[in-house]
Image (cartoon, rainbow, N blue to C red):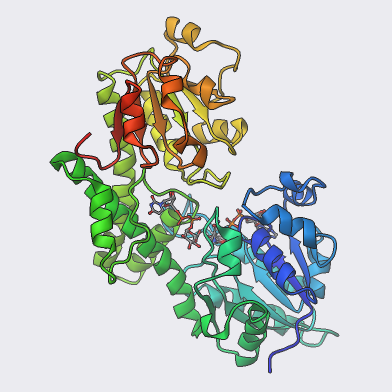
Length: 479
Ligand code: NAD
Ligand code: UGA
């Protein structure tokens, strides 16, 4: 029989903490869920009266927030109070790649995890279950346990002194489908040693997840399974993208190849769509982490195997920028390119590690004038990612071309503005609205000979070619 849980606290109100806690609050009305963060701005934004302006765009999330916020779901900066009240605490903070010191460029920076553990050590009361929700290198639970045990020792004689149990419960949600992934998960993974704590966490999930989908492992297997899962998914994308280059060289078609191999039930059809290269905050960082761990444990061959998955992804992004340049007669100066899509995938406003960032930078280095459109990503975010401010929206593209500005960008209000006078359109995110563009309508507004580059295979080639435009799409050896 697990401990009865009444109050849950989640440290980190990010892409994982916010949606995950919203689903727990929705499915478990008897629980009190408090999401805390050090960022006042983030909490303020989660508490925005207008739920369309919460910090994360995720289909279905705003409805859940409307339903639960203020009832059994709260967002707060009062870290001390909510840790003290909690029976169970999820650590859901960022774990980016280290930028300095030992393991820089590969290992995870555990600064935020450590600071969360110290906050828990300082403020927790009574028996508290601590759950690792962040993606962590195998053996991180050891670090958390040491910090908590040290606190336990020094608080031994105090009233209400805290004792702890640590579990690993990695998150497998994907952005853009987070709410559905949380409500209908393929599996929930719980790693740990203390049966009662595992049971207490399972009981929460049992409110909506069938028992047979809750997998229980030891804590190290759970931590490593999360990294491995992301590495396998990313590896499939790098594999299919590498074959797309071969398709273009040989006359094969990557969509046909994907279909043919995906119908083999041992391979399966998911994650075989060739695109501009994988993005998102986790694939690259988690593989680099795996590379670091393999090196650390004296397995250089294993490290180099996984490192290639990241290397080929970067190569593929440069390859796309390069072929756009080649098709446009080898030079992009005085040319306007409409960039359609900046987020790393559709249905999210997240741009972290988006392939669009590298491809846009490469095109700007070649002297292009980019007019960038994305239905959900803000101008401010794009400027941050490109490390470059946009020119004013009122400046006409013809004027820009005449003056031979190079390597600049403008934010497009709509697709029409992006395409006006453009020499090319490059689709980088598979937003639904781009698949429905009426190319007959826009072809005359572009400068001919104009091109459409579809890195997501969302356009019917006939619609583009019949409108008199040149067409390229990823992995298409016959266009
Ligand atoms: P995020 O950057 O969106 O959010 C993390 C939040 O934690 C930030 O708001 C930050 O201010 C807060 N924070 C950091 N230290 C804190 C502290 N000591 N006290 C209180 N708040 C603190 O990150 P994310 O995308 O939600 O990712 C969190 C973890 O989940 C990472 O380990 C990531 O690898 C993993 N993960 C992410 C996804 C995803 O789709 N983004 C999916 C599965 C797993
Ligand atoms: C990924 C995993 O799918 C989640 O299970 C995991 O929890 C999460 O990482 C994490 O740990 O952060 P996410 O990055 O949100 O989720 O999105 P994915 O759907 O996996 O897409 C990642 C990238 O791969 C995107 O750029 C996407 O466009 C690309 N992709 C995906 C392809 O190019 N082809 C495909 O067939 C699938």
